[in-house]
Amino acid sequence: MGESRKSSGVQSVERSINIIETLVTEPHGMGISQISERTGMSKSTVHRLISTLLERGYVAKTHDSSYKVGLKLIEAASVYLNSLELHTEARPYISRIAHDLGLTSHLGIIDGDQVVYIERMDMISSIQLYHQIGLRVPAYTSSLGKCLLSAYSHEELELVMKDCTFQKFTDKTITSFEEFRKEMLEVRKKGWAIDDQESEEDHRCIGAPIFDYSGDIIAAISASGSLSQLPDERIEAVAEYLKSTALEISREMGYSG
Image (tube, rainbow, N blue to C red; front, top):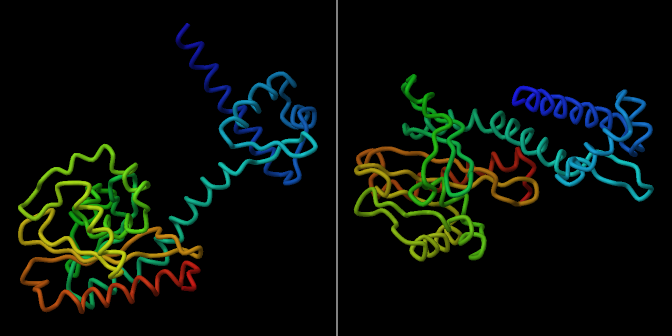
């Protein structure tokens, strides 16, 4: 019985994909009968699957009661394509940051209240660095995270951070939402952020945000090192370098600000 239900589920997925692939070929939309004819499915099956796809936003209904690909599918594809473009455009800059500054460089995106590293480079190549691609870290302890969340409104920030426990990693770790919110105001004002031994003793990381064509923050770059590599007197210069580099990447992504 379980196997039968599983097979039925797989068949539904395959049929749903067939419907989507069929709709992609007709941007102006198709009726139930036309979809049924193209896919070889019964009208009742097409109607049942279309109803689910419609509810999830992967299919949309037109003014003449035809069906076409929905915004949800377009959005999902756009996010994927944007991430590919971001990675392609940013990688040479991440390499240049490591080379010019002699620091470890990063590219990260936000996922809820966590930062996900999608690129990381060092002057000295190391397998360990590549193991850290995909690594997730708390946004509140990360310069990348601070940059990525800096454009959020108070309400948006509160929603994203509602389940955050603000674990203390060092004496300098931010330990409350209110403290983090004040930090966001500073980051917004300066245009860059710092993790000043907040995630790890004897470690600093400076970050700057990357904008897309619409002016939204979609990623951030950073450079990190020990206190001896990033002493107080070097912070401003590194921050300005990263802001300038982030702006170059942003313009590659269509940003005109």
